Amino acid sequence: MQFTALTVFALAATASVHGAPVYKRIAQVISDSTTKWEAACDAAGGGTQCNQVAVASFGTLLAAPGPCEQQNAADNMIDLAKTLSSNADMIKFAQIFAQQPRNSPTSQSVPYCQSAPRNAELNGLYQCQFKGDSPTTFVGGIAVGGNGTIPFGMSAPLNPAGSCPANPSGPIADGSQLVDLTQNPGVGGTSASNDTTDGSNTTSTVTTSSATPSSDSSNSDCEDPTGSTPTASLTMTASSAAAPSATPSSTGGNFQLANGQNAQKLNAQFATLTATSTCTEGTNACVNSAFAQCVGGTYVTQSCGLGLICAALPLVNSAGTSITCTTNADALARIAATGAQGGLTG
Image (cartoon, rainbow, N blue to C red; front, side):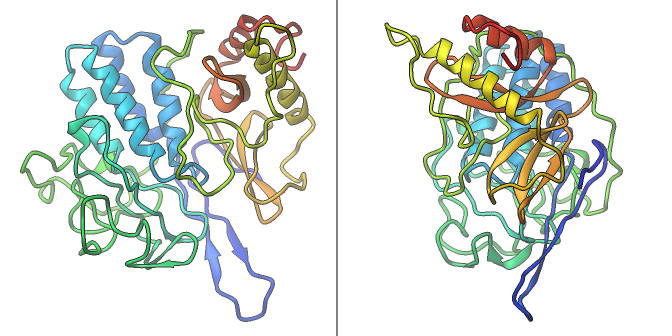
């Protein structure tokens, strides 16, 4: 089953055991979450880094990434803002992004990060939940009060459940974007209650500027050690669990070449997949240029957005690959930069 780029989708997954609960997948158009931040970055003179950081960031809203990857992405957004005279709009939109609800694979609340951010501007911030998420049970069947169900630095469950500093009245409508509901991140002693609504907003057209090849200077190759789900997440920095082991194929520890060749192998494999291909629960791939997650043994696709494709790319600073949304030209350039020959698929 494939869904279009501008349609918020919900996938119902019914259990095989009679009488078991019916879960609904709650999702959103993730690329809309960083559109305003990217526009502010472009206006501040951030150049090609703006799109690269934006794309890497919105991928952390998918169900697969670990609980701290969204916060790490917001840190990256603020890091870039600080190189651009601490641009106030970029920081503000990064603070709101850090509070955007994440996709829920089971209509349960999504666990909170349990570590402090790098940047003080993100202190005390955590994601809202969608209204359709259970307020009493978190992903994995964890009851409120269990590990990850209380935001970092707090000692009691949220009241109201599902709220966040930018929307203290409670959760927001399924599939909506917090940045479309408020311009107040709710930090610095301010209250966002007068600036937010809980109404369902219409989905805006994705306006993502083209990415150009770079050395990924704005990000380091890392993965969140707290993630319990195998991921090949939609990010430029997370290692792909679906990727082959990237061992150096030449003397001198040339992992860059091996990374490029392994990315080509993955892209060749992805080219044979369709939305009806069988898959292993929790794995991720690219299907018809869209990012895909395996749910219930079949792929559910999420369009990358206007002008972007899903592709496996070589990591830059360590052995491994990532699955990300990028332009075709950028994917080709990154693979070629490793010394691998033969384009996207080898």
